[in-house]
Figure (cartoon, rainbow, N blue to C red):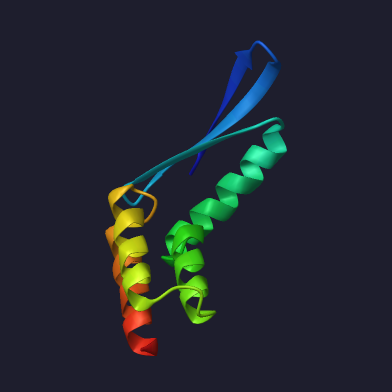
Amino acid sequence: MATIRTIEGKRGIVYRAIIRKRGQNLSRTFSTKSNARRWAAKTEAEIESGMDEAAYTIIRAWLLGRQSDEDQAYMIREQFISGRISLEQAVTAWLLLSHFT
């Protein structure tokens, strides 16, 4: 379950949603608590399903022919190294790419 923290700053109150799940640490700041909760629920569901926005974007770009296989492999590697996708997601993306080539 995500943690929603209230932060009082110079511009007023903001809400930070923090998710720690499956080796991923994600956070994002919102102006409303409801938006923070909505993002957290959506992101947790994506992590549970094994496919997050970064992996989806990689595969979608490849399927639309916007990038070569080499570019896709590089993107998957960079997303994994930067922590945007987990090892499981990187392997899933790689297997999907291999299946369609």
